[in-house]
Every structure is written in structure tokens, then in C-alpha cells.
Image 1 (cartoon, rainbow, N blue to C red):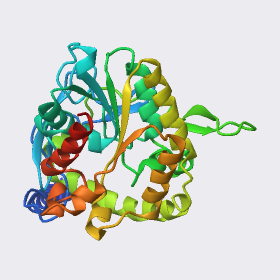
Image 2: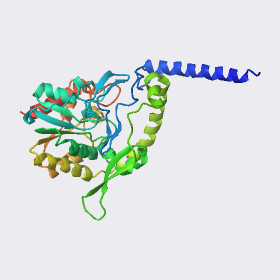
Image 3: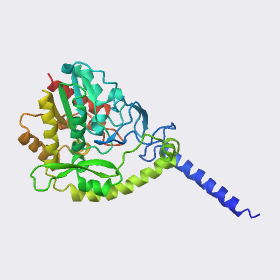
Image 4: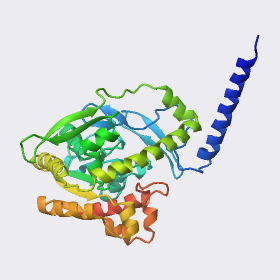
Length: 351
């Protein structure tokens, strides 16, 4: 009997072991800015397209260890899937809803260090965190608020805008090109009706499930999976940047105004005070000036919603002793220190 098949098998196994060892050194040794396997049995992502109305969300009553080059934290999600403790129904006058993307959710921050917890500690409010990662824009903000605003009584609504990506997150044209494999809602202009939009769902026709998959196992225990994901994202990001330049060149903000007006009308009907917070951008803080898109949308907010309270912590970040410390060292999300600055600005506006 020929030994060649056995030799080829042994060679393949040896190469696989060597590749995994090399990836272990690169990933666990933090020589590249990749996620790190937690060596725990869990889903490969802490978010997924789980909600039939707004898509990206979290698995209820779950937890997740998120480990990267600059943080190693655990998230906990309550019975409705929010990254927060249970919403046990405190008095309306002492409650608030926080809505936004990963900046509001607290990407890279444990529950006790996220924005909702920081506001609670300074103001005494019970802040319910409905922020989520997963490419979440103002269209999804408005759908989420429509789903939950009657379910949980609140006096305040905090809407955290991340203008560096909200226009792309809301763009159905961009979604068709980059997120065709996702289950995502978009609002597209209604034919013949000015400033009106029709809700449609593009990409996958079915939601993700909570079931574990082989990818989840690979993510949990193999550094090679994280290395390959790092390489894939770098390649995809280079392609995505080309699309960004095409689609984000002339944002007009009309869809974002429509989504905000939808949320504000519901809040007003329930006598809820609304505040819009503009999340500082790492690039803008580093350059010490806001870009044309941010300035444009701030003007739109003033013109379209003259009575709306808008908080822009940009200058507070610029004037901070160590502005770069307000963001994670390995990505552009807010650090615990950055969250604290924003929470102070929000709490001061409530007094």
C-alpha cells in the first residue's frame, strides 16, 4: 500500500499547525490589530441581524467576551437584548432612553463603563441603553424607537448621532454594494412625493438565528480565524473606501431629518424631552476642526429643529489635556474617559 496519501495528510496537518501557531503569535501577541479568540464557546459576533423590524441587535439574556489589542471586556445583554441591566420600570420622571450605534452601545466598554452608566452616575437618571453595533443608522434608530417607546416609560430621549458613518449606514445604494448579505431596513424616496420615504428591506430575506455554527467555534478557539478575518476586512475596507468617496460626496441630510422628525413627533406626543448629541470623531478631534459634512448637518439641525437641544462635545474633546485618550488606542470608539466627557455634558444640560 502506498504511503503517499498518509505523507500528504501528515504534511497538511503539520502546515495547519504551523499556520495556527504563526497566527497565534501575530494575534495573541498583538502584533496586528485583530480581534483575539476568547477561548470560550460563544457566537463570533455580539450582534447579529436578529430583529425583524430594525435588523442588527443582540441575543437576549446573553453575554459576550470581546477581546482586542486594547481592551478585554465582557458585555451583558438583558431580556430585550439591550446591553444593559433589566428595565424594571422606574418612574417616568427619572428615566431616559438612549439610542445610537456602537458609540452609544459602548463598543469596547463593559456595561458599567458605557455611556448610559456614566449618565446615571452623574444625573441619577435610569438610562436605558438601546444602542447597538452592526452598521446601525438613523433609519434603524427611528424604527427601534417606534418599537420600544411605548413599552418603556421615559421622560428623556437621548439620540447619539455618529455623523462620520450615519449617512452611509442609511444609504440603500451603499447597502446594495457593501451589505448585500445582511438583513437591513432602508428608507428609499417615494416616487413623486417630495420628502417622503418608503421602508424596504434589502439583502437577505431571513433573519440570523441564535444557533451556533462552525464559524463560531473557529472564532472562539482559533487565532487563524481572526488573522484571516483581519486580512479580509483590510481588503474589503480598501474596496469600501472607493464606494465611500462615490456615495458620501454630497450628502444632503434629508433622510436623516425625516428619521429624526419621526422620532421627535413620537417623543413630543408623549411629552418626552429630546436631546441630540453629536458623537466626536477621532479624526476631527485630532485635526482640531470639524469637517464640512458635520458643519452642514449642524446647520440643518438648527434650521429644521430650532427648539431642539443639540449637544456638540467636539470642543470639549479638543481642549482636553489628552484628547487621544478619549478614544480606544486601537480604534476610533470612545474610551471610558471619552464617555465621561459626554456624560458630563449631557448631565449639565439637564440642570
